Length: 357
Image (cartoon, rainbow, N blue to C red):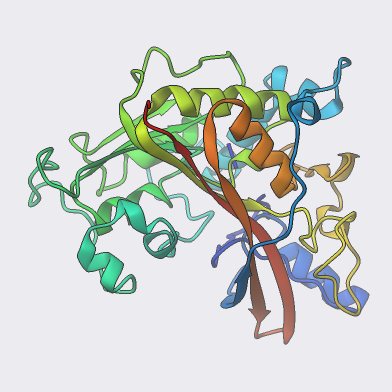
């Protein structure tokens, strides 16, 4: 599960891009092009990465309120999963076969070769921008389980493989468990000419449906890493805690959770405190969606977007036994056609399951 919109094509450049401009007409054009985590024909340039000072969260801080919340109601009722299925069906077209052609809702996330470097072979670590050709199942051998580069990865909210395929291209000895709540997305991923069941198991799973939704698919302590790119922002706080516990369960000692997601200070969050520039209106990018809780929005297609506070995220993972930290990552997003620039703010983290003493 992971923010994205536009009934037309959306494209992702290192994060997700929503263009805002000071003039109302310009804002409308930008919003029509890119409400989800990507913007049509947008160039992206990295500005900076920095560790944001955070206060330490306590276990009590991470407990969900006794009463239900609008976000929890949507997720627990299954509406979150249904919304993502509608989203992918929209990109397929009414009545169309989801495996007939690729869904191009997002760009491939090639930057993960750099950001998740611990999953890559040394050659990619040395040159993250090196060309990696598409996977050819008929020409490639299966992953070498004895290779020092062999990794078993659980990809949460895999969509149509925009994270999984770039990672497997860069490391042919990687095996990926790819799960998503959308049947359409999984059907499209499996129909890709790059899909190889020897190196990828793609399956449907609603991670909000149960406390241990992956127990029948993935054994305890079998994964080297769990990845989630704009996934945790689709969860309410209670479900986040359950998913964090599942991450701990499936990870090997020394394995890690690697993720990137919306930051609390992102300009798309009406309650953020940083990143806004002259002419921008915080939170307005979610129109005609709406804000339902603090830093929590429902887009017009029903998908959920929660802006994550680093301290709270650290507290949730720490509570289940995963140690690590978050950092704030900023990017300047540029729409050259409209001559608009905006600074986006994301949260990126690594949390490790420590080996037994």
